[in-house]
Every structure is written in structure tokens, then in C-alpha cells.
Image 1: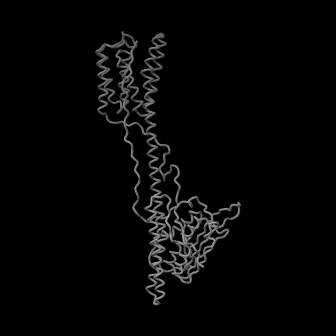
Image 2 (image 1 turned 90 degrees about the horizontal axis):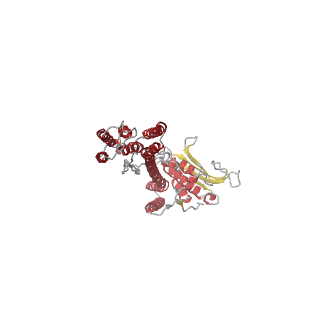
Image 3 (image 1 turned 135 degrees about the vertical axis):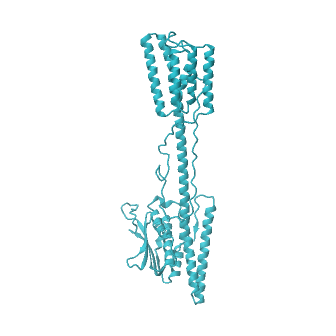
Length: 477
């Protein structure tokens, strides 16, 4: 009865270098434009996600020293077993069997074919598999079973998926045919049992083992691809968070500190042309107060940037009284009408109050820097003033809204603006579900800023921590 032996070594799998994900670094500083914040979603062209990772195919490395050592080990086994005289008669009988020299030559060639087991497993299948199968049928060397095991195992593990499937199909067909031939031609139950045993050990076992190894390797590659995609997604989210923080800092600098500095520039320029000493002193005092306020806001922002506490917001010295003072510094006869309800949290949500105050600060800053008298600022809270289309708690009734209108005569610009503030108006309003417009009126001599916001934020983005706390919001009489 033909003896069988299972190879003692497990063929190594090719190692693939893992691609290390790179965390995108910060971009070059530039003036950030306002953008509507977006909540990261699933895999999308904007954001790399772990959707449908493709399993990488097996690599075909170069023939290395370990491949040569394995081929030499197989050759040594062939020589040792051939010289020891351990063999059988083959399946076609001793009459058609060839001698030991022929078997030794064939098996040495088959052992040499294992040199390409990782580089080109199809060569191993064609050379080692064919010679080993021929030796099993007409020879008698025990090493034929060992090399046939390797010839079927290598294409499944190291070959392409198409080669692995083809190897499996061919092996199953040949195993079925050999069993049928043994049962039909000989009719011997013992020979059929021997053929089934050899087929199980030499054909079925390497196929099952090879596919198991391949599935484990594919699962590992899929897990690595998912980990890399998750790492890239986290890096992308981190980069967007940093960009969002930079944008919020730029808005804070523009909305608060730039307004104070504009007041400083305005009053110092005005003081230089005043003949009345008392008026000059008042203008310089106002400039000094604005400079101190800008310094306090800047120190508050720096303390927030250097703190390790999460969710800390800067304390801004921004209020309706300060805005009214800025306007009257530009136009002593400016009309400022602020509805008392705008600071009532029962009427206007705090997030809407903060957004409205920032919109007003930007509009006032532009009016002071680029506008001329007469200047009018009106803020009103009432029903039906919001364009967001929200409904009240009772259902169907229009909710309270807030409307801000600032008008000033268009003056000659002494310096060009950055455009950040004007575009930030619509962004601030959209965050809470409102609208804001800015531009000349029909007469082309008046600049008009109009914002209409809901009293209750209609957007979940309104609760993002991008508005500093507002203080000193006493309404001027």
C-alpha cells in the first residue's frame, strides 16, 4: 500500500509592508473665509472613510534565500529516501513502473520547481505537481506525495485568486476521476480505500489548509485597511477641527478686537483735529478705553488658547452699550433703538443673542470705519420677524424673531477691507437658522445691513462653542 508523509514545515506567507497613515499638518497661514460647519458623515469624497476596503492581492516577492533553502531541503529528502530504499510500486503496477534513477531525476526536478513557490506558484503547480503526480502513478518514491502536497498548497496560498480557484477545481476533478477509475476498473474495495486516503491527505488537506491560511491573511489585510482608513478619518476630522478653531479665532479677532482698534483709530484721528481741549480729552479718553478693552479681549483669548480645559470660551467685553458708544463716536446724532427683549433669555435664546451681537458688532465696525453720518441702528423682537419658517410650541403659530437693521451713508474708503467680516454676517446668521444681507440700497448712497434671526435657534450648529460669552449688555437709555 502506498505510504504517505505530510511535510513538516509550514510555508511562510509573504510579508507586506503596512502603509503608515500620515496626519495632515497645518496649512500655511492665510485669512480664513467663513464656511458653514459641516458634521462629518460617512465615507464621502470630502472625507476618507472605511467603506468597502479592497483586499490586497498576494505579493510576488523575489526568490530569497529561504526559498533556496526550502528547495534544497526537498532535494535532500528526495536523495535520502531514494538511497534508503523506502518506496512502493505505484498505482499502475510494477510492470509499467520505471526505475530508481528515473524517479530520482524526476523528483529532483520537482524539488527544484519549489524554488518558485512564492514568486510564481503557477510554475510550482505545473512542474512540481505534474512530475509528482507522474511519480505517484508510475514510480514509487515517497517524496512524490510530499511534493504533490506542496504543489497544491502553494498556488492556493501564494497565487492569485483565479489561480487558487483553478488549482482547487483541477485537484477536485482529478481526485474524483482517480476514485472512479479505481472503483470501476479494478473493483477492489481495498484499492478504493487507499485512493481515498491518498486523495484526502495529498489533495483535500492542502486545499483546505491553504484556503484557511488565505482567508486569515485576507481578514488581516482587511482589518489593516480598516485601521488605516479609520486613522485617516480621525486625522481628517482633527485637521478640520483645527481649521474650524482657526476660523473661529479669526472671527473673534475681527468681530471684537478689530472693532476696538477701529474705535481707537477713529478717536485718535478725531482728537488731532479738534480745537476744543475738553472735546479732545474726551476723544482721547474714549480711544484709551477702547484700547484697554481690546487688550482685555486679547488677553482673554490668549488665556483660552493656552488653557488645557475643554470647552473654555473667551470673555469678551462686547455689549449693546459699547456698540452704541462706538456709533455715537462716529456720529454723535446716531439713532440707536434696541429692544429690551433682545437680552431676555425667555424671549431670545442665548445662542441667538450671541450671534446677533456679533452681527451687530461687524455692522457697527464697518459703519465706523467706512460709513458716514447719519447712522441708524434698530434691533426689534417680535412675532413674524424671522424668515427661518419655525413654528411655536403651540404648533402653527409663528415664533418670535429678531430683526436688526443698520443704515449709514456710504463714505469714501480710506483703506480696503479684507471681506472676512461681510461674508461672516451671513455665516453667523445661518448658524442659528437666520439670514443676513449687506449692501447699498436703491439710492446707492446708503449702506444697509439687515439680519433676521429666529428667537430660538433653528439649527443644531447653533450649540457649537464658537461664540464667546457676552457681558456688559446693559441697554443705553
